[in-house]
Length: 116
Length: 117
Image (cartoon, rainbow over all chains, first blue to last red; front, top):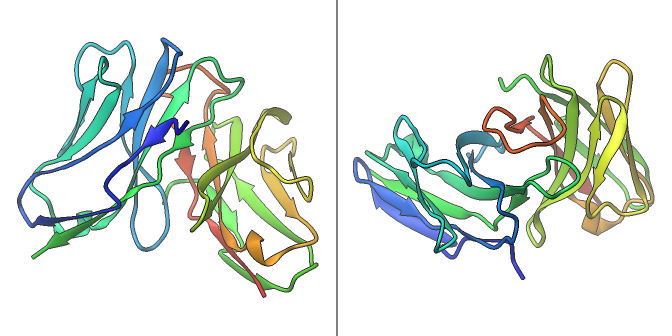
């Protein structure tokens, strides 16, 4: 089974509007972390936001917030006031505490396109 | 600039050849990870090193090997290259080897794009 599922291969959003990128995950580990990364067309992977499984509040970083619904195993990324520079691929990732290392498992990504 | 340096940025080679990708982690980071990003497989974890020792192994082919040196830089060696090895190879680094903390975020380099012809 897929550990991280991003069901939206591509999305459009109007500049200055908010957009939600979906992510669902599957784990039996009670301790885990959820991450979002942005990959612009230039290729680099940019860390956006982190949510720990025991965190009581949803994470926020500037225009990014994470809508964490633990019972539903979802960790959706909300981008407020979209900008043209937000056009990129967005990846959701999970780190489980029971893995030997610190590696992340990534979803397939969502391509976001911001329309002027 | 993320602080993680990968060389070369682009590499074109032929099937059957061997290449070495190099990574210098961010200052202070002890852990190095290698990921492969291809169109059909997405982002796949290959291998992790922590302070010179292998920590975790993912979907790394036997034709591939890696190591982390005493100065903490890492190299990924790809041999007997096949067309399907064409991909973007990322190195990432983090402070610690494990644990679920927001402080232990993976910082990625810009990647090395390998094209096998």
